[in-house]
Image (spheres, rainbow, N blue to C red):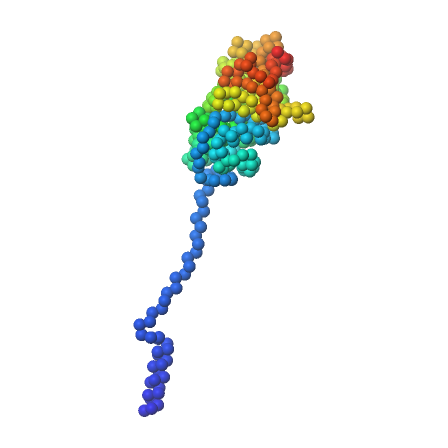
Length: 363
């Protein structure tokens, strides 16, 4: 009996140890959930941004910068930054890197600098891309190939956004090399390759001379202007004369030309007054800007395919004003009227072409 009772007691103890007290429940342990980081959605076309990605609104002052390529002109960027009110700066390009971001950011105080690489019509019609451009206080178009800009951006929301900045918001807009080439209402696309002066003077209708008439950007004062860049460095005076002659003959437009050397920038204020910034010295002589002014009554005497050009008028075919650049901004030329008698700080020339040879002489 005692043995049976002992066995019963031992069994109860074992049961009590195994099962615990009546009514006890296990306390559940809630595992720590993993930290989920939601990435900021990538801005379409953006290849880099410095500063605040949120939009700010700053007062702006209109201005245009036509830069000739080569080394960038810091004074011209500072001129634009001053007009941006320190807002958001957008760099546009179709190839290349975001190298302008730290460069521009280091030249003044701005809210942000962002580079958009827009290399398709799909991106150029993206609403967010257009929004970023429209809300910029300053836009600069990098160098590259202007035919890319024409093919990717023309007739898209990017074009509309740029024209909004130029004509309504009146924010500062500029470009260098190919970016400068598209800022005129009349422009050379280079889509079939870049024409040299020698080839253009020998045959003004060769297939590399591809000109367009006011179907893209609407820059103030530049609707009847064609630009050229890398001017003396690549000896482009002859080809720009041929461009103007073709425009005069084909469209009956006495277009004006603004041509800019490398390391040189033409800065045009809200009233059309232009100054020339850059690095001109005896050891670096190629730093000029040129303002070319054909006369509607002086159309080229000989401008036909496969024939050397003649545009002579007793060596007084086209009036040209040349201004040397300086770090502080040299000369004064009013592109609102292209009146050479009001220009200061430069020299007046006559340019002409005789049987495919360019002639320059002082007025």
